[in-house]
Image (tube, rainbow, N blue to C red; front, side, top):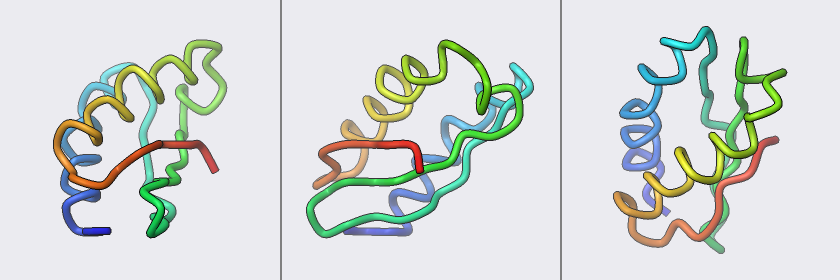
Length: 74
């Protein structure tokens, strides 16, 4: 996995999360394509966080970083 490409893609989505009082941190990436992130601030406790994670963050990473298969919270 290209860790730097993953981190750049996460930086792309950070402003949207920060605008709502939240943030995102890269945790790890596995060779299987599974990327683990941590949603913090308002995003850490928001009931819509899983939707943000899957439809926002995961969709963006899959589009921009070859090999990403899944994004999970960790």
